[in-house]
Structure formats: structure tokens, C-alpha cells
Image (cartoon, rainbow, N blue to C red; front, top):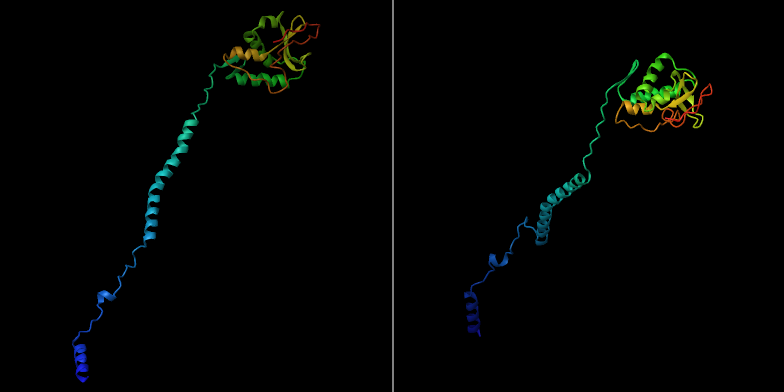
Length: 215
């Protein structure tokens, strides 16, 4: 027994002791800044979205302008006609609007059935004689005076010529404006003071004058 025990002890003493190597026991270290697989994929997707976004945004931004240009044609204001000045007695009218304004003011502000003064007559008489289409018929036997009267049928103010024979006839100053300023289209009167300066029907004269035919 002693011999066997000694041999066993010798064998154990001769066997080298195997120690774990550093390579076997050391775990593989992962760099601290290495991204996780899932996070890396998210980062790649985000970069792809950022690369596509500017192009889409620019396209969307340009699209409304293109539609606006296609749907909104360029508009140009019509050029106003140019007229030659018109001289009636002592007064000169540069535009038809100026003439309408002046004659309309007399029509609406002068006292009814009162003769016009010399200045007003020097403007109104050449207007009737030179520009009214029916001047000869309106003047008749001759002009004694001009008045603003109330039309018996329409109850509106109108220009009236008092003839030398006592008869009367109304006339439209607006027809004169159209003749003196070719191409002018008058607007409808905004006030009740005369239907275009006495359109439609004449006034009855003081001395038994006949009814006018209008215009």
C-alpha cells in the first residue's frame, strides 16, 4: 500500500497544472461608441428622409406659383380716350366730364323759370346752336332767353329755350356733349335733376306755347 500511494503522489506531482489562458477567460469587448443594430438602421432611414425632404418641399413651393400664373392672366387698364378741348363762348371744356359737370350744376341749382344771365347764355346758346342734332327745330322763330323749367309730364328739371314768339322747347345738353366729344358715352344721371338735361317731352310756354317733342 505504501508503494502504491507513493507512486500516485509522484504522478500527481509530475502532471503540470493547466491554468486558464487570458484569451479563454477574457470576453470580447464592444466599443462604447458602436451603435446598436436597431439604432443604426433608424439613423440610416432618417438620413434618407432628410435627403428627400428638400426636393419635395421645393416642388410643393413652386407648384402654387405655377398654378397662379396659369389661372391669373395679366390685366391691363383700358386707355382713356383723348379729346380736343371744346370752347363755348367764354368757357373751355377739356373733357366731356367737365362739360357735363358744368351743365348739370346749372340744371340742378338755378332758380326755376328764371332767365339765365349773360354769361350763362353765352355758354348755353352756342351749345344748342352748334351741337344739338335738332338745333334748327329747337330754336324755331328765334331765341329770346334760356331757363330751367320743370317738365310737365316727368316732373324733372330741363333746359328750356324761350322763343321770340313766346313758345318754348326743352332740349338735352347731353346730346350736345356727345356731338362735341365724339366717342363719349354718357352715364345715366345719378340725381333726379333732369333726365339728361330735359329728355323726352317739352315744357309748356308762358304765352300759350306748344308742347315740345323732346330731346
